Length: 421
Image (cartoon, rainbow, N blue to C red; front, side):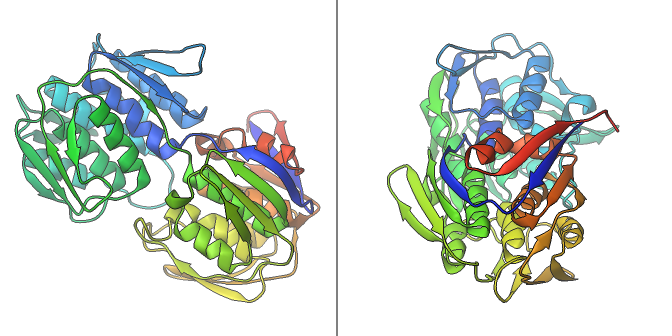
């Protein structure tokens, strides 16, 4: 089982290429189920979550290969199974994204209720409510969602809450439904836009994506297409947090500044100097950061996926910062681990107050989820002496070669393989 050993204190210097977006890639991979033609995808990151999704798609009958241009080719013309078993979905909640495409194209799907990071309740009830509105018969049987529909029919759907995967699932299902579907209270994240743009290339008729009201006119069938996945805004934000915490200067390539919104605003408040161009960001930091408070909210607000990383930055900032987590009720599990490194953090329900200290000190810590892993890496980069991070399989789910990229920037970080615990 791999661990990360970090000896902190080094500033970061150099250039790094940001990988394709994990959160955009997962629904895009599942969209291949909507057509029998081949789909060619570029800029797919090499992550454990991608491998998990490809294993699931392969189980269903999807064939895939990487061509010489590093494009991922998927072909779904021989689907021989409409069931996603627990063994293939237990580690990743995004597995529920095969439900909409399978139901819409084949009229039936049996999907085990999914797992994923233990960061709180992330129910799929909004997915099921929307699919029911499209005419599906939905039942829960023995831990499975069993969905059937001879033909989905367009409907007006207002979800009770903004849900990214719910919007993606319903948008994919509605592409082949008869008539028009209107999704109200839809999520607006760049990943939604990425998926919608691919679906339109495949022959779908989708308007309004990127807003709270998406209109889908169903078509009889979709066809093949090529698509380049957008850069990972969360990976980019994580590297910016790292240089803001450690000091130094880095250049990020393959990045879209407009996707990062509130993350960049908060880092500028913390003292990070930012310059940018069409697909690059240059960031430099020469002083101790200033504490910055924030509240997580749906896009374009501050992303919950950046909360842990900015908290790690605040642990050594000047002053105190109030952080409020409004998306997930159990997303402070990294607090205890940061405290092991010497952080001064107080928890009160959905809020924490971080009092900056001058130094953190290395210790053995344990990653509890994907973004918590990233926060511990940042904390390790600024802590004195060695920090050993256990359970970094969480990190590998969502960051492509993070240790290698940081080492190329001058960090003293090594992957250590030990006997399985």
